[in-house]
Length: 275
Ligand code: PXL
Image (cartoon, rainbow, N blue to C red; front, side, top):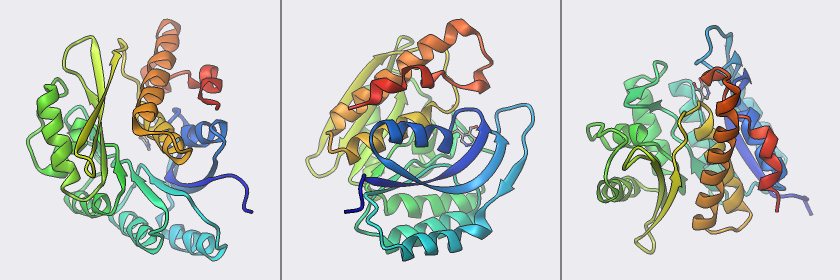
């Protein structure tokens, strides 16, 4: 009756940079899903650019979410990404608790390459753990996995055995499915791995690594996973789709020589996500 499937996308809107809402919206649309955008902050460009403006949307979020709820629509999934303040994480947590019938995919965007983002405080890390506890699916990289579990950052080039331990440890925090991203067992390979608590099984998706890692690819990855799972595809198919898409878009971007912060030219191959 309500038409297409719907995913609530809680993320920032960055004008330049191909990340967050500006990738989630086109990706979900081409996958036949309506994205219901909930901005967390509005930036002229993401924070990796030489300069940017930043408008924190936290104060507007409770009223925004209250009004969305009053519409009595059925939202298939809530998908959260970049969150900018303690208060914002609490607002998202409340919303998730009030909408238990929707799947919750939490991409705990907190850091990269062993570094926590400068906007993150200790209190925000605690709040993020609480959010993760309430998630059905999480998609951390190894930096985020180490922050969430409290283990020392082991670097990206961990063994598959170590990655399996880490994924299982993360699932003990609450989520039924953990997708650990960006495992680099050697220079040429990138592995995205899923652990399903219910069946105690691991799905390993290996891809040839691109020469350059671009910002925003984590958001593209999580958006494709959200769309694919909402469309009823299994985790193995979702992982393959997301990993291959990012590899292909990175490979067409590298020869162009654009600054890394401009992200990957995913628009050129968006149609591959159809059907
Ligand atoms: O996930 C990438 C991202 C999203 N949102 C903002 C960012 C970045 C990466 O730097 O700055 C605001």
